[in-house]
Length: 605
Image (tube, rainbow, N blue to C red; front, side):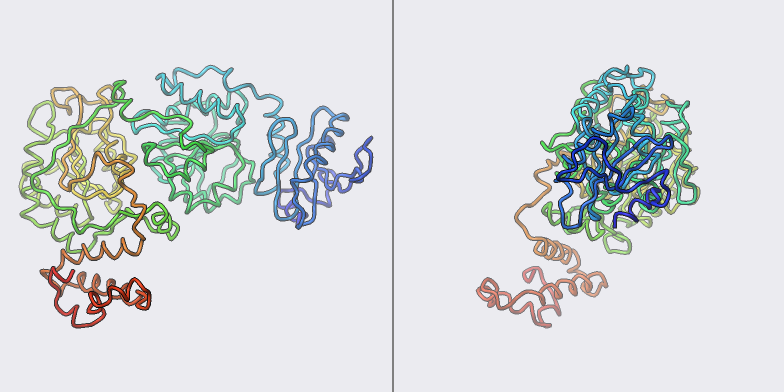
């Protein structure tokens, strides 16, 4: 099994200029290990680059570390450097850099190019702390501190770090500052930036690599374009999942993940574990909402990130603005909306099945019809117009993002607005993933006077950076506190970042306004999110009951019938022979009959 693993990494056993088998270790007492290397991997000049100590599958290869250490130490006496080592048994491969780093399990053998690169880094790397941080890239003290903290973590032997910085505090600049320090210290020569959305990848390449590190060759990796000659790479996680095996495990020296969260680790875990390079995770998610597994994935065993810079601290330091919350009068009740009181274990179980416990599809539901009611929308637009932050003229709304529930809801909002305010035909635009020329619409919203109001479904929830935004309108319920924080981040940028002050109230931005039509919990505490006691099936059942309550007035509605069918299916799965059920059976046995469901009243529920 080891032979094909070596050949997969380019170590062809028939090419003795690269690989030789069972080479005696000069000057070594043959007992008890016979003093013979199993595989010796060579540089082009004939020096030994690495030694592979092979064991049978049933043997724990870690027990052979002392043997391997002796081999590479002896070989070092005959050349200019100490070779690397691998411990392998066909199932596991451990990389050993004796005297420089603890052994670690790796996905596969490294190529000759990989090992040459690691040797260069070993021989030429300078301490991260010895390289001055470039103030042209990062000009704020907390960004410098983030870079220093990561440097300290890696200097102390860690291979992963997690940076938590509030949206709008300069994660892109901090990332470029980190990359610059790693490259100038010769601690990384090939660096990969990974994000889960195209916009973030393009932003990293265009507003990051090309702007702050123009001297370094860079590229965006695509399935049809694998240029491996550059030093800086950017890629979406989805693309990386399709191409990662075309790279060797040690191809990248440093990998930076933007906006890490637990669903990524469940869905793309193999991709993340494949690469051996050091890893840095970035997120704007408040630390108290970060899943424990995310901390552990980045070696933060104490539940604390490597560096933390909060939204509250950024407001105090005048780097972000706070918001004023307006609870709209024309609002909807959250009762009957999809339940989210799941335990962490239950939420993870849903994520592993590819389901987002916070993602609700309202398309085609009665709720969509209710929120799209023309009279309701008219009242809501009137209220928005009355209370929103206006531009410097005091007449028109400043830049505003309206978070709609569905595509149909967004289009109906647009139509009603156009009916009410025909004198402003370009003021409002629907910008969703289904919109034609959506990229152009986003650019106009960011850089031009019109449109002022962007009605969006998910597309503008995260990632978009329009400093002039002074109004956020929540016309949908947001179940996830993490997503809620990301959405709030659309309005937090300070006046100094704004290009067009005439779009701001009185030419200044002191804060921004949130108009909430759904009683979203903007002060939600993370501990309130998780119910550690209610089983998932009970939670789902209770949620369906709440949803059923909203349909009692129209029990012939197809959605109502579907909810009833789901409830009855769950009831049929209840073990009627259990003690707990038998004890309460007289009270609930009607629920197993057709007659019970023929006509429902509140007392039945």
